[in-house]
Image (cartoon, rainbow, N blue to C red; front, side, top):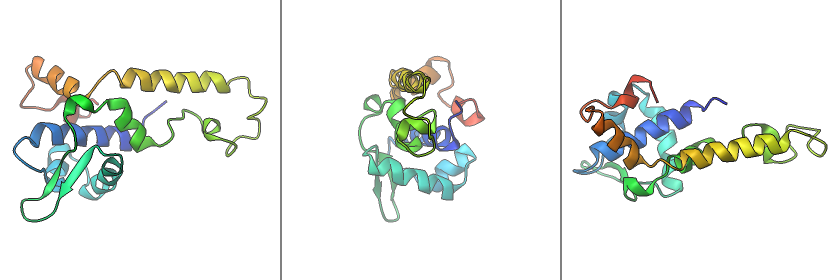
Length: 150
């Protein structure tokens, strides 16, 4: 399975907010500049993350976005799930749409368990874990995920 840019860029955005938001809200344009991602695209993603309670926003000249809870309480799997939707690897998991063989499919359980395993593993990491890993590698000034590696 390939995760979409929603997950990859959304996770990078959340990490950027966690790292740069200690002194106040972070502007989308600043995140876009640091991450090399369109500000319009990040605005779409931030709405989803606000809806699930990971991000809060402040309007005005000193406005921007900040984490709604500590980075240590935001599991990566939940961020990915919020941005990707129902968490399916294949369309049939989400119901009757997309597959006419859902009732007799011998592989449906396999795909369900694979998706569940992926999210379970992603949920073992929080935003704080990834930031700590970067700092331990001596890259606290350079976000490793901004080079396309994550």
